[in-house]
Image (cartoon, rainbow, N blue to C red; front, side, top):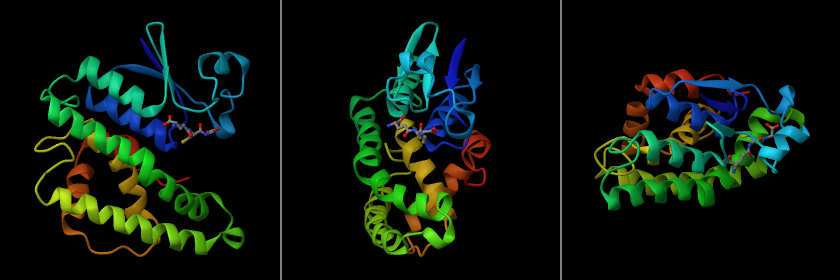
Length: 206
Ligand SMILES: N[C@@H](CCC(=O)N[C@@H](CS)C(=O)NCC(=O)O)C(=O)O
């Protein structure tokens, strides 16, 4: 059976759990990371030399990097759904996943980290504000894309919505100023209606 290592409040683990739920996959999950430890043991590092979560073992095949895992599971179990059949739609989905890694997360991380993980008196609010503004500009690009597309890869939900979905939850639930972006908000509302997203990605941020 598919085995997943990672704590439920990790944004990267949530992508994998959401993906599995969309695909109706059975799995065993082992708490790992932060207060749970495990990821600093030699056994874990033998699987994932970064010592980060998530890691999966799929019948002996070990894989880490959340997007590589989402792509792997989508390609294996979600042909025509999470893994779009058309080459262009599949590349679209892939492109928005990359966009999260290269553009969104480096900006969201300091906002999230300061507002959730750092004690109020130690927060770098200038850093929060600088990155919040940059994020708002990038979400404006997503909003323009969503004016003509119901989802990131076109008409249907796909793996391309997963990284943006978990980031959007943080964007819409952190106490920050947000510009009105109607298409992005409508897309997020559609994402919030998905039971798999509700189950794995909408818990209080800790
Ligand atoms: N690029 C990696 C990043 C993994 C990562 O940074 N994981 C964090 C949690 S979101 C982690 O393991 N932090 C250490 C810990 O939880 O102990 C991925 O997408 O899987």
